[in-house]
Structure formats: C-alpha cells, structure tokens
Image (cartoon, rainbow, N blue to C red):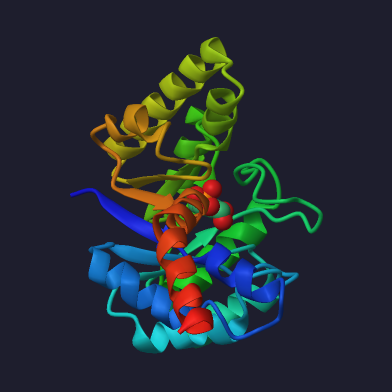
Length: 241
Ligand code: PXP
C-alpha cells in the first residue's frame, strides 16, 4: 500500500516569518486528515526556522494519522523524540546555512554514533528511517544498521527536472528505481521525498515498490492558488459589507 505523508513545515514557515498565530498547524492537520492523507511529517530543525517543539507536541496529542519527525541525529533531538514519541523518526543530515535538506546521510562517517541513536529510538518503540541518496552501498549499509525504512532523497531528481537536464534526470530516476528494488529485497520499507511536485511526481509514482511519498513544499505552494480566490473574496466581504 502506498501512502502520502504531508510535510507541514511550510505552514509553520508562513507563521514564523511574522511570528504570529496563523496559519494554524492544527487546522492544517485537520485538513490533511479530511483530505485523506495517510500521515503527517514535520522537520524540527536545530535553528527552529519553521516547526517549533510545541508544534510537535500538539501534533502528537491530536494526530490520529501516523506522525513522522524528521530530525538530525543530535542528542538534543534524541531527547525530544524520546519524550514526544512520534510514530517514526527520519534521520537527516542538517547544515545550519542550507535552505533545505541538501542530501542524504553519509553512512561512511560517524556510524557508531548513528547506530546508538537508531538503537535508542528503537528502544523507545519509534520506527527509524534513514534519509539516503539513491546509492546501493548506502542501502546495504542501512540494512546492517537494522533500521525499519529508508527514504530516498529525490532532491537531485527534482533539480534535474526543474533545470531540464534530461540525461541526468533519467540517470537519477534509474538510481532511485534500483535503490528501491534493492531496499525492498532486503526487507526495508522504501520511501521517497524531497522536491517532488505535481509535474515530476509521475515517473516516481510509477515505481511500484515505494511505500511512502513525503511531500510538503509543492502541496503548500499549490494550496495558495487553490485557495487564493476564496481568501480574497472573504476579505472583500469583510471590508465592503
Ligand atoms: N523528506 C525529507 C527528509 C525532507 O527533509 C523534506 C523537506 O523537509 C521532505 C521530505 C519534503 O520535501 P518537500 O518540502 O520538498 O516536499
């Protein structure tokens, strides 16, 4: 069964740029549920640029849908995950100056530390997923770390699509396909995410062994246009009547 986990980070981005109380993360959650989403995802970044600790706590309390917490494998985040207990943690690399997550985890370095984080999360009954490049060696390594799932980084795939670099795009698609097939054969749940949008989703959606699609920015962006006309009409109504 394939599933869509909606990433709510950019609902919080809109709120945080004004440090106000809207748009409400709980209302966003309710709409996800109403629309039939299979899960929700939030990335609690070290710099708290969008999602805040309180958002994760509230979502944990209200969410009937599986909650995925994306986080860097730091002690601070580990403590938060152990306290809040999301259904799944996706471990991602994090660079403070990056605009968004730039790539998968490097499984050739700091693996002992990563293994400790994975084991601690599993002891807390939290499923663990690693965010990785579509690289067969990395997928094999993930299996040895005894994680439940891998999320393949589709950022490069998306970039090549957006820049119309079709040869590189095709190469990346094949790498993603092969990674998904390998991961599935090893018994890993295979997910994908990052940069997926309405124009580039189809070739990825055609890969049958993918379980979860983690998508945020494009959905929140499209929602602006789906909702802008109604929003203007309601404001006009308040001003003019
Ligand atoms: N998966 C991971 C691991 C991410 O870091 C992100 C971005 O926070 C996403 C999926 C969602 O990416 P996008 O917002 O581009 O759909």
